[in-house]
Amino acid sequence: MDTVGADAPVTPILGLDAATTARVLATAGRAPSLHNAQPWRFRTGADHVELRADPARRLPVADPTDRELRIGCGAALYSLRLALAGAGIRPLVTRLPDPSDPELLAVVRRGAAMPPTPEQRRLLEAVPRRHTNRRPFSDVPVPGPARTALTRAAYEEGAWLQLVTDPDDLAVLGRLAREAHARQSADPAFVAEMAAWTGRHGGHDDGVPASAGGPLPAPNHPWVTRDFGGPAHPRPAPAAFESAPLIAVLTSHLDGPRDDLRAGEALARVLLTATAEGLSASPVSQLVEVPDVRERVRRSLARDRPPQVVLRLGHGVPVPATPRRPAADLIDPG
Image (cartoon, rainbow, N blue to C red; front, side, top):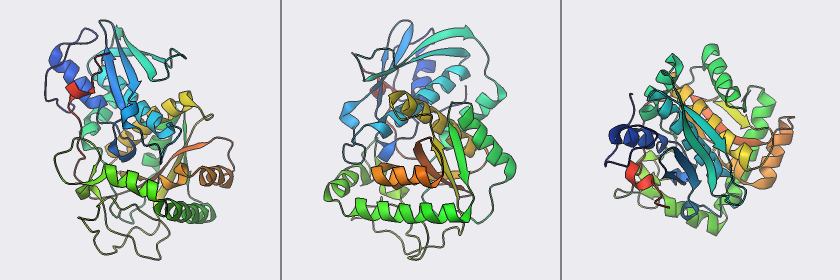
């Protein structure tokens, strides 16, 4: 099983030994989440693992309904499923099993022994290489086979990935992104919340380090990027970003906790597929965090399905990893 390691032993789960259990949980903990808040925890039993939301890691200004929190937990669920498959276990998942316990998002049990497929091995190998890349991409187009692989990855997880190629649609999304960015940047509560989780300088195992930020795009560039450097780490001068990024909109059937969770599973698989295809990705979160802008994104794409995540995809240079909590710290003692 080729995956990230772990810093401390944990109680074995689902018939695995302690070392493999730690690697499985560490892999789940590599999932993406808003501001790298890592809003998940795992409660383990003799024959199951519970995935639970961690309310202490909410971002109530950017994400007042916990939609992005559940998407992040869904990404952790897919990563857990993938890691178990890499360990030779077919995971059996029950999503939202108890309406009276909204923090309980999924229960995973052990199915039949089954070797991982070549695709699962390929995606598992991509886990330690998948990092959000906020830096400029090249103008080399994303090839057709990679585009097909990305849309298939979302579809097989019960979601849709719309690749936006129409120039008029891209122009509309660019304008909406700039509008949403300006509105969030003018909100002192939003700015304070983002500052609490980003621009960090060592000593943290969560949040976004200053080193993960990127340069400013040129003032006339059609897309915007957030400043994750913080006041002690000013952003570099404007750089030449790609002229035509591949913008992808991940959508779900409906809005609601179950759809949020499935969108997160699809997001994790899409991002790992992108990494395996040699691509980089970064979210354009402004488009789905401002409610009326999110609704206008849905209408502008002439779809009934709600947008859950918007991604910028392309060919980028390698970037450093963001910190992660050790596997032992992910376990909820109950």
